[in-house]
Every structure is written in C-alpha cells, then in structure tokens.
Length: 338
Length: 217
Image (cartoon, rainbow over all chains, first blue to last red; front, top):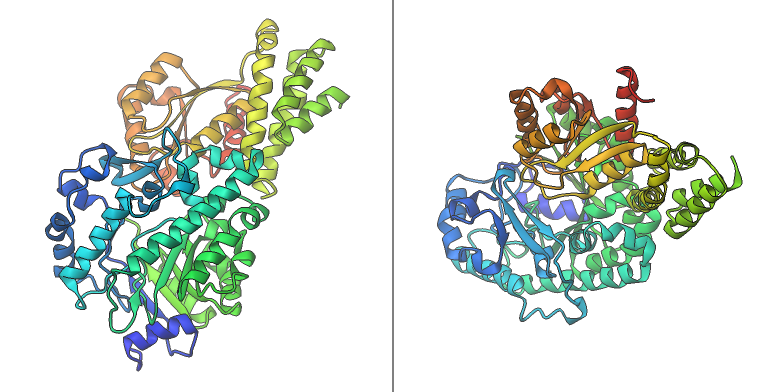
C-alpha cells in the first residue's frame, strides 16, 4: 500500500514525480458496452439520434446498477460518462451508426453523401447535442459525488476512416491535399467537442478524471486515439496526422494518446509531440509479447511522457513491468479478455 | 525480365492504374502470352507487394493502390486468359462474419488473393453462417475465408465453421481466419485450418496449403 494519498498519486502520474509504486487497476467494466442499449430496447440496424433512449432511462438501466456494484478499479476511479458504445465523433461528423446486437457493438459507416465539414455547426449538431445532454444529466444526478468525464472519442484518423471508408487509405495517395484538409477539420471538431463537454463537467475534488482511464488530474484531460493511423507509414502519419495530434495535446492541460503495441511505427513522432503528457499502449494479443515491448516502453518513459500500459496482463507481465519500468509516471491497467 | 513485363511489374508495385492498363495492352499487342503476363509480371509484383508489407516498407495505402492496379490489369487480361484456357489457381469464398461491418481487411485479403491467381467470391460484410453455407454449395470453393475485426464477433467464426460442419461441407473446404483480434490459438480452438495474421500472408498460406494438397503452386 502506498503511503501517498490516492489523488496525489494520480497527480504524480501526470508529472512523473517520484512514487513508491505505479498506479494499478483491473477493469471490471467488461467489453459489453452495448448492454444498456439492448436492455432499453434499441433494435438492430440503423440508429438515429431520435432512436437513442433519453438519458434518464440510462440512469436506471446502467449508471445506478453500475454504481451499486462498486465499480472501483484498484487505484483507478470509475467515471460516469456518456455511453461509450456510441461512435460519438464519427456520428458527429455525419457517419451512419449501425447497431449489431450479436456483435455487442455499434459501428460507424461512411455516409452516402459526405457532409461538408467546413459547415460543421456545433449548435445544430444532434449527436453533439445528445452527448451534451448526457454530460449535463450526469452532472445533475451525481454532482460532486461521482467523477463525470469524457467518453470514448476516436481521433481524426479514425473519424476519417469511418467517414471515407476504404477511400481514406487510397485518397492519401490519390488526393493528399483533400485528406490533409479533412484531417485539419476533424481535429478542430474534436477539440471543439471536448471543450464543449468540459463546460458541463463539474470539477471533482478540484480537478478532472480521464473518462476511460479513471486517472484524476488537476486540469482538463484529453484522451484520444488514432487506430486507423496504425495502418499507415510513419511518413504518412507525419504528413497527415502529427500536426493534429499535437494540436489536441496543446488544447488541453493534460493529454493521453492511445497506441497499439502492434503498430508502434510512429512512436518516435508521438514522443516528439511537445505538449503530450501521456502515452497509452495496449498490449495486443497479436503484437509483440511484453518482454519485447519493454525497450519501447522505456523509451516512452525516457522521453518524459507518463506511460499507461493496458491489456490482458498476466501476473508475470505485471511483475516484469514493475521490475523493468520506473514507477514514476506509470499506470498498469489490466483488462481481462472474456 | 522483358521491358514491357518490367513496366507492368513496376506499375503495379507503385499502384499506377492507368499505366498498368496501357502496359498490359502493349504486352498483349506485342504477342506476350497472357499466362506469362499474369505470372511473370502481375503475380510477381503482388508477391513483392506482400513482401514489402510484411517487412513494413508498405502499409495499407500502398497495398490498396497496388491491388487496385492489379485488378485493373487483370480485367484487361481476363479475356486473353480465358482464351488461353488458363484457370484460376483456386476459388475462395470470402466474407466478414455475422455482426461485423468492417470490410477493409477483408477487401485487402480478397485483392491479394486475386493478385495471387485465385478467383474470389466476396460475400461482403455481416455474413451469417447460413450464407457461407449457401455460398459453398453454390460456388464450390476450395477455401472459405472468414474475417472479423471485433473481439465480440470472433465467435461468429466458430458458428460459421459449425454451420459448415452441420451441412456436411466442412471437409470439402479449407477454412482460413484472420482479423485484428484473431490469434493462432483462437484459430486452433475453433477448428480453423489456416490462420493469416494479415492480408499479405493470406495468399501465400492459401497457395502453400494448395501445394501441400497437390493443388496449384
């Protein structure tokens, strides 16, 4: 047991100040994020904003039972957030949302007619309106009792991969200027959306808690990911997405970028994002085993970024991580594969 | 390699669709046999694309444009291949399993398999087990390829294999599985015959399996 107060240890995660042991948690949320939607009768197929049950219905179907089950996650905090099953950012830019009960998932598909992102209107955007309604309701129900936070918001490359489908990849070669323009627009929308949420997220014990990871910070935190960029070269990442990722990091006091262990080809560039505070690496079942990842993980720590490591980590993995990685600025998050 | 074959090879490698089309027409006009164009220029180029993908010189965009160029060239070459009675090396029925709407990985596998000389019947996404069964009955493929991107849809691969077994078709096809969450251990556990970690290796593994069984090489 650490001698430090829990929130002080969380604060030190971001700053890299000394701690006697890393933050550690075992997620109890599971992978079945669609369950509350199924329980509320959302059918298979296309999902429009109007089809989503009103936020108060989710209170009884999801938030209250979750809280009653003590969702504390080791050192980490459980955060009430808009339902993470929804592909929020993709929907906000105009992608179609498709529900698949058998997959326990929602997917974002390219719209038949691509909206002009230059004409994005946050005030009139129905999906953003729904996200805000959830955040406001959560703040009203739980106030300062439970941390309220950012939900899963996929980053610019993921937004564009959904928006353009397979064309996303070929357009980078065929029409690079178009993709650069769209990437800039997605970045601006991403920042605008999260800033709009922070207008309604109350401070929790003087700070904010990262919605997915459950780590408290003294200021607003941005958690983002670029999974689609994991399928492109380092040069293309630099050309199309590095600038946007740097802009997101610069727009919030604390930031955490999620990467996959099987696609660390951009790591050097990610570490060069000056205002990025933390890097999350998920240990992919098909990627390199943890012992082979250690040099990259150490590189992240040497670059002065906090390291959030997550995956289906065994006890041996955890021991290895604790022995080879510095505890300062380290969080080990175990997510058991079902 | 002859200049025109080299030009086809290079154009596919660099994904230049218009040039591939022009060079294939030039090669045919110059009297190159369709089989030589296919094997020495086009399939060889896609094999090199696969090699570069595996060594991380190429990523998805480069692979997609190369496969697109290959497809364009193949469309022009097909009448000549039919005329010369050159058969595909095998037939593959391919689809993303039930509940999963992701298609890029599956499309890449399809293009790479075509590039390796297979005939591909693409069933699309969100394909229920019974649709795979019906497609196997109709098309009589040697290989069934199952793709999934989500951990929650991987189980539909098992259901598809079981449906093939229940229909008495399991022993007639090689079942190949792949997709981001799929591992060799999972492939073994559900009774798949082949596991492809990514698109590039799918064609090589399918061809190798065929060779083992005395089929195409």
